[in-house]
Image 1 (cartoon, helix red, strand yellow):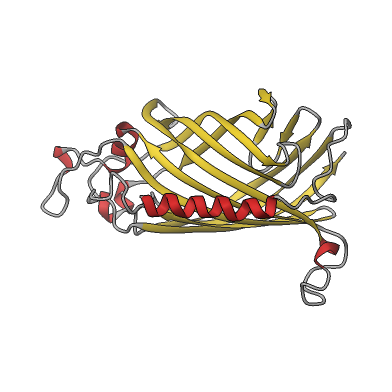
Image 2 (tube, helix red, strand yellow):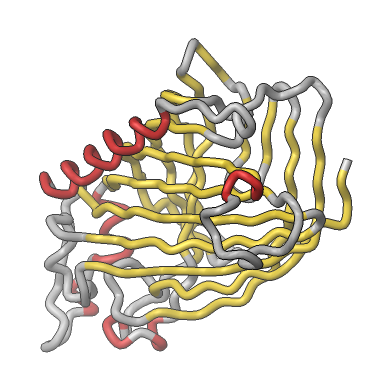
Length: 292
């Protein structure tokens, strides 16, 4: 765990050196006039069935595209940001995440166990901005999030505990003409598109209820190949993700990759954990049919 925390700290230090250089074109202050864009498309992704599983699934899902910004709020593909509370560089925000449904009959490690339902996580986060603010396109902030997790089969709700932890996020926005000379001629379509590069690193912690929802093995599900297991709450792994988006006129393209590492996690000895790291990735495209 100390190695992972050291890595996150190194990311923080390295990104702060970039944040010290202001970007006048992309960190412009937000005007009082609101901006709204609406569109739609599709997103394809490959993700593990659950973190620590050696089986993964591919998804092709609709991609609603909504972007709204005024002097008080910002809504984009990643988050809703509003000035719920703000003091100097500190901002109170809302943090959300989730997990996909897993049919245990489709996962060798969980065969014979109850299914994993859809999990939705929601809670507050406090952010400190070293560069920029929530209304800008380039920023660098540290965050501490706390989220309540609820599982559902859309017939009932189940309390599955809490997740919390620190993270750092760095985003740099460019205009296409700023990269002239750095990319081969013809690499991008003609025009002056908008490019955003994002890096996010998380150190995750969870209570025992959450970890046992995914990794606990009650006695009734124990077999000769799958010992019973009960996890304590605590360190739940770390992850780092990279995202890249490109927007030109009415077209938006985006992709991401994320690496998860569970070395030192409380649940690592669970028989349901088949590997101590995972990758996920995805790519999407959207057409913006309304701009104001």
